Amino acid sequence: MGNSARGMKAMYEVRLSDLQPGDLVKVMCVACGHEGLVPPDKIRMKGVPLPGYTPVLDLQYVLRCQECDTKRRVLISVLWASGSREKR
Image 1 (spheres, rainbow, N blue to C red):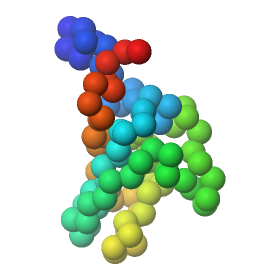
Image 2 (image 1 turned 90 degrees about the horizontal axis):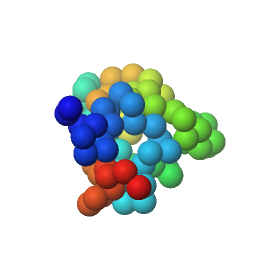
Image 3 (image 1 turned 60 degrees about the horizontal axis):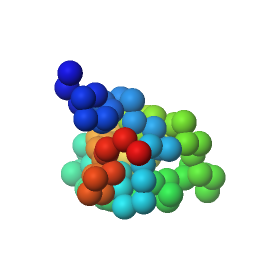
Image 4 (image 1 turned 120 degrees about the vertical axis):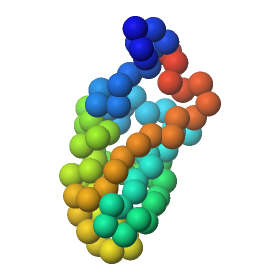
């Protein structure tokens, strides 16, 4: 049963539209180790917000490290706000 029994999704299924206020996307650069927390409403590509259907894991292909300027070398995870993983 795993995560589906409690209404949670696997990480590969999570879309930007699934993130609620208070949730944060954690980004870690593999090249230099820099970490950052980004609210979902601040994730943009060339100044334009990404569509809600964008898978969260696909952010690894568009985000760039602010420290070393490396692109496509990041690990993505989500820090869920308390109770936001439950189905609404």
